[in-house]
Each structure stands twice: as structure tokens, then as C-alpha cells.
Amino acid sequence: MSGYLTQYVTEKGIYMKINYVNPDHVHALIDLPTHLCIEDAVQFLKGSSSHWINQSDLLPGKFGWGRGYGAFSVSQSGVGEVAKYIATQEEHHRKTSYSEELKLFVDRYELQWHDD
Image 1 (tube, rainbow, N blue to C red):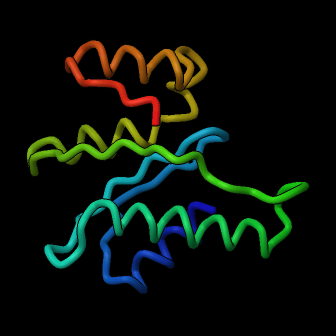
Image 2: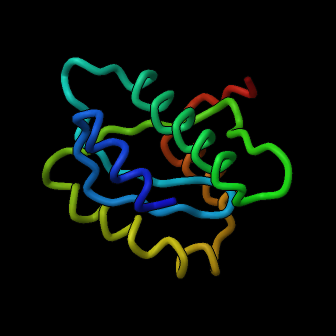
């Protein structure tokens, strides 16, 4: 699916530096064009990839993403660090689960969690 996402966003005029598809979440580092809002970009990614997964019969039953998503900005000086973090996801999640990491992230940056 990683290759599909890269191809799809390129067709939409979005530059994706790197992405990594985990079993329960996806990380993507993109350069969001000024004419596109975050919500639309996420809708493109989730909608098209759900359609592709279902059309390709990759999973038994119908696939659909969960409702939520997280979006964070990064300065140009932090792009390399974020790209490295995404590239090492497989190794990273052997030590820390996605749900554990998400909770730590929300707590560390004093974010407000929304259950919807």
C-alpha cells in the first residue's frame, strides 16, 4: 500500500517524502500544497486507499479506516528527524505499541484527546 499512496498523492499534486504503513496506522510526511486543507488531504488518502484495498481483495471482508487522524506540522529543520522516525517504524513498534506511543505523545505535548 505504501507505493499506492505515493503514486496517488503524486497524481493529486502532493509531495510525499516518506510513508510507512503499519497494521493499525499509517505515518506519512507530506508537503501540503497551499490550495489543499489537511482535512481534504486526509480524506484523499483514507478514501482512495480504502477503495484500493477493497478492490484488490487484500483483506477478508470490507475494509474501512477509523474516523480519526492526527496531523502535525514540522519545521524544515525537523524534516530529517521526522523522516528517520517514519523509516524506523517497524523497529520502533517492537518496543512501544502504537496505543502506548499515542498516549505518551498526547500527554507530552499537552494535547486534548477527542474520542470522536
